[in-house]
Length: 289
Picture 1: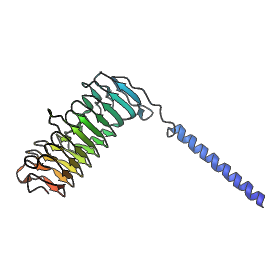
Picture 2: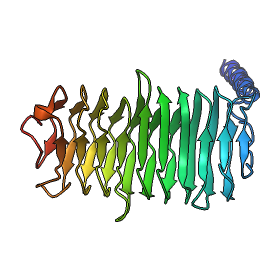
Picture 3: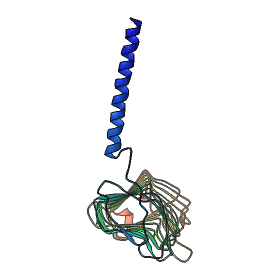
Picture 4: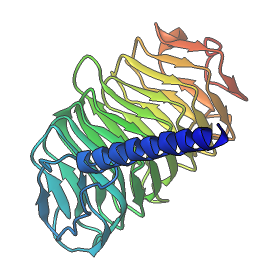
């Protein structure tokens, strides 16, 4: 009886191990366990979608070609984790001229502009880094584009420029802007030049405003963000900019508290802009809460 029980347990174990082996073989053949090998990009290369899935790039480039990389074909995902490119101060790091492109990762240093989404829709950028950009570091123009968990540090001009030109606008989530602008160049951490959204973002040490909604711009929301030590204000809404919402943000040590404030609205009695549940030390008008 004991022998039969042992034999039966061994038989079950063999069946389990065979089934497990078949499952892992299936995963490997499907690409889950054996992703496509990483590619080595060339300076000036136009990246094309990988017919087998995600196009993976690794390594380091130092380039004086403009742009360093470009994407002209949409509906594709590019994995740049582990990839670094260094520019010459006059070139664009990566230029996107197609819609519905996803980029994960990428570290671009010493470019004029590290990332330029050129009037496209539905692009998503994740975990991107722009370091020591000479001009505007990250420029996103179009509609329905999202950049999330990305960093701009030491930009000569604005860190993030979001120029929404459609109903959805462009969105920045969990992004950080550190030290934008120079003593000679006033610049913003995150600037809205069209409809858009900022959620859980931080702007620290800008030579002008941390967050700026430019004059005449409507339909922007800034929520759950942090503005610290920005020279000309923490969160600022320009004249003629209406129907904007600024809620649940924290702003301190911005401006001088006399001409420039933690929170500022250039419209009389804030017009129809909504300021609610913000934490700050000073503001330009009593309508800011």
